[in-house]
Length: 265
Length: 375
Image (cartoon, rainbow over all chains, first blue to last red; front, side, top):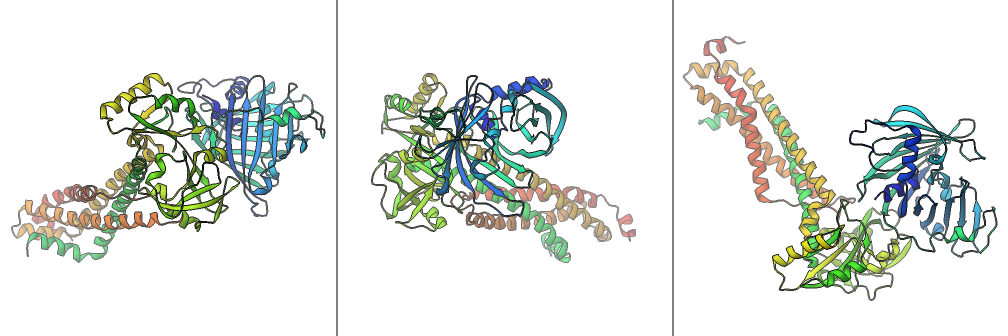
C-alpha cells in the first residue's frame, strides 16, 4: 500500500511513506532513514500526471505543460517513463530512465517511432527544458552508502531531520544532496542538490501534500528553485496507485544500448 | 410607551454603536449561512447526481477518502456483481478533475459506459449523445458549455487530445451541468487507465427491497475484500470534500457564535456604563429591577435579531454570488433550508440573551443613590 507514496516519492524525489511509530520519538539513524526512504518508494506500478509551469529570473512565465510519469521500483529495478501530454509540441516525446546495476542513472529520450527515434542522453537532462531533472526523479542518493545526520531543522514551520547524502564513487552528476525529512511521514520537506564545489544547484520544496488511498501522505505540489532563480511549480493533478505496467511501458529501455547516442533493437 | 418601544428608543439614541453591533453580528451570521449552505449544496448536488442516474447502490474501494474513489480494474468485479440477486445493471464510471483547454479552470470529466442507463437522465438542449463508444465525441453540461464558451460542433482539448462536442445537456445536478461527459472507453484512454473505474453503479430491479440492499452490502463486505457497497447518500457523506466543508461550517458557527455573543456583551456593557445615572433614575422612580433586566435584554435581543436577519440576507447573497464566480460555477451550489434559517435566527436571539444577561443583571443590581451620584 505504499505504492503512490513511492510513486510520488520516486517521481519527485520528495516522497511519502508510513510512520515510524505512533509518537515518532525514536528517530532512526540517517542510514536507517535513508534505507526506509528507499524502501518506501517500492511500487509494482504507479502513474502520476503533473502540470509543470516555470517562472524565469526575469519574471517571465514559460508555457505550462503536462506530463505523465509511470514508475516501477523494487529491489531489482528502478525505472520511470515520462511522456508529454500537452501542448501538442511535446505530445509524442518521452523519456525513460532506469538505475543500472552499477548505480548509474541511464536516460533514453524517444519519439513516437521506436526504435528509430531513440537516443541515450545525460541523466541531468531537464524534462522538456523545465527544472524537473530526470536524475532527481529517481532519487539515487538514498542508495549512497554515506548518509550523515545534519540535525533537526524547520522548513516552513515544519520539523524535519537533515540528512546529508554524499558519494565519491564514479562521476555522479550530483555528489551531494541534503534532504530535510519528516521522520513521521518520511516526506522530505526540502531537498538541496550541490555540485562538487558545494555550490547549491537547486532546491526542491514540498508545498502541498495529499492523503492516498493507502493512508500514506504524498506530495501534491512542489517547487523547484534553480540557482539562476528560475522557479518551477509541479502540481500532481491525477494519479493511479496501482498502474498496470505493460510490456510497452519501458520498451525504450530494452531497445537502447547502454552506450550514449547508439540505438538498436 | 411600552417597554419594547423604550428599548428601541435607547438603541435609536446611539445609531453608530447599534449599527456597528448589528453589522458585526450580521457578518458572523452571514458566514455561517453561506458556508453551511455551500456545504449542504455540495452534498445535495452529488446526491442528486447519483439519484438522477437511477443508481441504487455503489461499489467502490474500501479506504478511499478522496473526492473521487481511487480507480480499480472493473471486469471481474463487474461480472461477479452481475450474478447477485435482483441486479439489473452494473455500470462503470470513471471521473477526473481535468483542465479543458489552455486557460480554463479544471472541470469534472465523467466517463460513463456507452449506452448504459447513466445517460438516460440527461436532457439534451442541443445536439446528440455520442454515436459510438470510441469516436472522440463528448457532451458538455450547460454550465460547462457556458464556462468554456463552447457550442455543438466546436472542439476541445483534453489531456492532449481533441474532442468534438456532440451535444449540450441539462442535468438535475449542478455537478453534472458543470461537467464534460464522454464514454468510459474514451475516459480510460485519455487518462491511461484501461479497464479501470472509480465506482460501479448498481441498478436493482423493481422487486428489490431494503433487505435486498442490506444483503447486497453484507455480501460485498464478506466476499469482496477491499471493496464496499454503499448507497449514494453514504458515498457522498464519506466524501472528504463534503466532510471538510461540513467541519468548516461547524467551526465557523462556533466561532461566529462566540464572537456574536461577545459583541453584544461588550455593546450592552458599555451602554449600561454610559447610562448609569439614567438607570438609577428609573430605579428611583420606582421601576422594578426585573423591569430593568427586561429592558436591557430586550435591547440586546433586538440588536442580535436585527443582526441575524441582516446576516441571513447577506449570507444568501454571498452564497448566491459565489455560485456565479467563474472559478466556482458548476462546482458549488447553495442549498438553504427554512428550518436552518429559523434556527439561525433563534441562535441570534440566544446570543442576544447570553450577551445581554450579565450587563442587565449588573444594571439591575445598582443602588439608585449610588447610580445618581455617578458623573
